[in-house]
Structure formats: structure tokens, C-alpha cells
Image 1: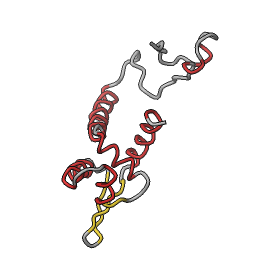
Image 2: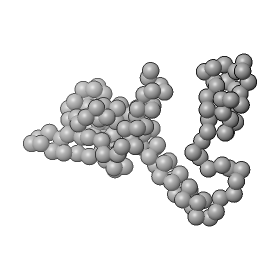
Image 3: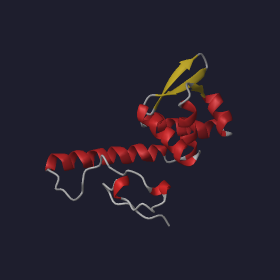
Length: 136
């Protein structure tokens, strides 16, 4: 089990014999919980936490993650997404609807085909991080 590193611990603070892969600088942009927060800051953090929770729920499905990963490389048709996921059109459409509802993607019609693309840069950034953490 890895040792936990306390917040604000820097590489210089760590013992010299600490494994190098665990010797990371963990300065954080997060508010320091040991310091009191004023009411406005607390309300903002709480509101943003709800938004973050909703955003992460929209990503918390294997199919939606795969769709977003594919769309991070550019616009795709529903047919292309169906083939990529090896799923029926109805299942893909359900996942696309959820992503549209959360305003993470947008649709464009060209004749009988519908094409989707990312509209939220946060989704691209998260997908890149997830890929780096879990797929490399």
C-alpha cells in the first residue's frame, strides 16, 4: 500500500529514501480545510461541487466515455459511433441523449445523417486525463 502524502508536502520535505515515483510535489489549488471559509466562498464551493458531481455522473458510463474519447478526435456520425461501440443504434442514441442533455456534445444534421462533436472543453481535458491515468 502506498504511503499517503500530506497536502502541501513538497519533494524537498520527503525523506531521501522515499521511492522516487511517490516523491511528487502535491501543492494543491484546493482550499485549505484547516483555514475558515467565508460564507460566499463556501456557497460557491458547494454550488461548484454540485456542478462537478453532475458533470462526473455524465461521464460515469463506459459507453459515454468511449463516445467522448472518439469525439475528442473530431466529429463522428451516429453510424461511426455504433460501429466503434459495437452497439445497437438505440443504445448509442440513449448515451448521446445523456451527453446532449449535459451539454457536453452537440448534433449537426447533414441529410439523413446526424454528426456529433464535443462542445465542452472540460470533457476533452477530463478524457485526456482518464486516458493518461488508465490507458497508458
